[in-house]
Amino acid sequence: MNPFDHHKYRPAASVAIENRAWPNRVIEKAPRWVSVDLRDGNQALIEPMNMHKKQQMWGLLVNMGFKEIEVGFPSASQADYDFVRWLIDEAQIPEDVTVQVLMPAREDLIKRSFEALSGVQRAIMHVYNSVSPVQRERVFKLGREGITAIARHGAEWVKREAAKYPDTEWVFEYSPESFSSTEIDYAVEVCEAVLDVWQPGADQACIINLPGTVEISTPNLFADQVEYFSTHIKWRDHITLSVHTHNDRGGAVASSELALLAGAERVEGTLFGNGERTGNMDVITMAMNLYSQGIDPELDLSNSEEMMRIYSASTGLTVPPRHPWFGEMVYTAFSGSHQDAIRKCLHQQQQDEAWQVAYLPIDPRDIGRDYEAVIRVNSQSGKGGVAFLLERDYGIVLPRWLQVEMAQVVQRESDNSGGEIDSAGIYKLFEKHYIHDTSVMRSHCHQLQDYQLQRNGAAHIVDMHLKHGNETVTLNGSGEGGIAAFVDAWQRYSGQNVQVIHYDEHAIGRGTDAKAVAFVRMSVDGEHISGAAIDADSVTVSFKAIISAFNHLR
Image (cartoon, rainbow, N blue to C red):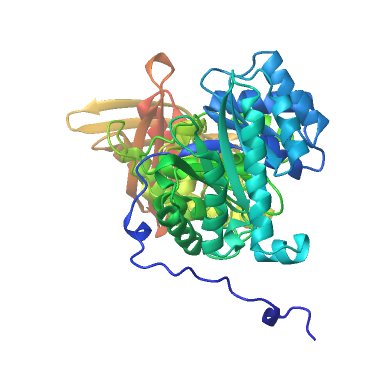
C-alpha cells in the first residue's frame, strides 16, 4: 500500500443550517482580543519562557493594548504559578487589564488555580475538557453522558472555589475542547450543562469559548458551526461568545474572521501565530486585516521593530520574511512592472486622501517601516525600480528614455552577479556608464578644461578647450543656444554629423549646495549615444553631459 494514500481520510461533517446569515454580514469593529502568548504560545516553545522573558512579553502585550491576557497554567507549572504571583504581589496588572488562567476540569487543579490568583482584583477562570468523538471514545472511553458529567463537575468546582474569594471579580469561561471536531448538537448540549450550573447573568459574567483545537476543514464550515451554536444555545443573551482557532490548514485567521460574522464577539490568539503544530490564530495578521479596511483594531501595532524584537527575545522564534504585514520583505517589490506602478502612485499620493498605491495595501510607515525596502533591484526588475532608488537616495530623476537604458545596464550587471544590486551599486553603474565612462580607454576620452560662451544677437558663440589624452584641443562654434553652439563646434572638430535627440536637466538639492544634473541622448553619424553630468553650473553641466556622451564613441 502506498503510504501517501488519501483514502484513509474522511471529509469533515457539514452542519445542517438553513438560511445562514454570516455570508451577508461584514466586520465593522474589532473583537475583544485575548492574548494567549503566555500560555498556549509558551507551552509550544522548545525552551519555555523564564520569568524575565515572561515579564518582557507581558510588558509588550500591555503596551500594545490587550485588555485580556491568558497568563499561564498555574496549576500545572511552578513557573506559571510564580509568574502569576509576581503579577499580583508586585501590582503589575493595570486596572483595565484582566488576567486569565487555564485549568482542566479537575478538582485539585481548579483549587490550585484559585490559590494562585488569591488577591487579584479581577480574573477569568478558563476551564475546559475534551468533548470530540475521538477523545470520548479513544482517550477517555466514555459516552456523551460521562463527558458531560466531567464538564458539569468542573463548572461546580469553579463556582465553589470562586465563592471562597468574594473580594475578587470572577469571570467564568468554558471551552469544549476540540469543538471543531465535535457533533454540533452535542457541543450545544455540553455547554448548556455548564451554563446551567453557572447561571450567567448580571451577577456572573460567563464566556463560552469555541476552540478550533485542530483545524479540520475550510473556514466556512467553522463559521457554520459558530452560527449554529450562537443561534441554538439557550443562554445566548447572557454570555460572550469567543473563538480560539488553530492553523493546521493555514486558515486560522480566516476562520476567526468568519466566526465574527457568524456571531462571535471575542477572539483568542497569539502574536505572529506562535503555538502548537502550525500555531494559533495570528492576532497581528487579523488586526492588520481590520486596519487595512479602515477599522480601528484597538491594538497599537505601530512599532513593528520593537514588537518583533521582544517577540524573538522572549520566544526564540523569528518572524518569517513573508509573514503577512510584518515580514521583512512584504513591502518589497523586485518586479519591474510592480516597481513602476509603485513609484508612479507614490508620486501622486496626497496626504489628505485615502491610500491608493498599487501593490501596497497599507502605507508601510504606519507600522514603523520606511520606504527603504519598498523597491529593491535584481535581474527581475525594470526601469521603475532603478529610477525609484536613484531618485530616493541621490535626488536623480532619470528621464523616461534613460530609465529604459539604465534598467538594461543594471539587469546585465545583476545577471552577471546573480543577485540584488542596492542603490549605491546602481549609482556606481550610472557614473560608470554615463558620467565617467571607464568602458573605453582613457586616451580616447575628452575632458572639459575651460570655455567661453558669448552672445551675439540671437547666436551664441563658444570657444572651448578639451583635454584629449596628453593633448589640448580647441573647439569653436556657434548656434541658437549654448548646446547648439557646442554641437556645431564638435561637428567642425570631428567632421561628424551630430543631432541632439533628448536633453533633460533638473536641480539636485536646494540653496547654496544645489547642483544640476543633465542627461543627453544624441545621434552621431547614425549611432545613438547617451551621457550625463553633475555640476554646480547649468551651462557647464550641459557641456559635460554632451562630452560624456561623445566619450562613448570608439
